[in-house]
Image 1 (cartoon, rainbow, N blue to C red):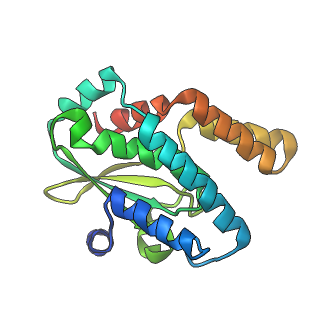
Image 2: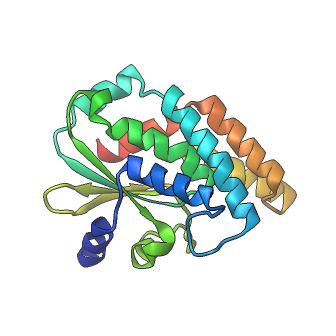
Length: 201
């Protein structure tokens, strides 16, 4: 596993680079990932707008900022993502804000992002119920690259929303995705912040 993590980190991107790659591909009418379709490009375009909005409006709560400032260890946060993923568009900007030293006043967290389809061996280690669900945050000790835990693909309450919807309707359709996006809007990233901090505290 250590060698796979090391290889993935060698191919990883900063948040700014991740956003730039997605934007550049959209200018060519493409999405990230191995599969290309009009639907995936459409989702990527929606997500580009979402991420830009969240970059401007999302903030780390004062309480959570203090917890981040008081971290004793230094971490690498390695995120598996793709530009077309609706959950990633909601969660990766929050993770970026949590890791950003300008927000927490100290450099304790280095954020690196990899694309799922380019890092299949890594993804296969961190499956969710046997599926390649993203985003997936892998928390690493910066000095040893030991895996300390992982989070994703969505907060517990959002997971439950989707499970309940599928139990009622038998399928995850566009309406389910709309309900999920409404949940994210209402939650304002607080569940993601709380669950990640619980993971590393």
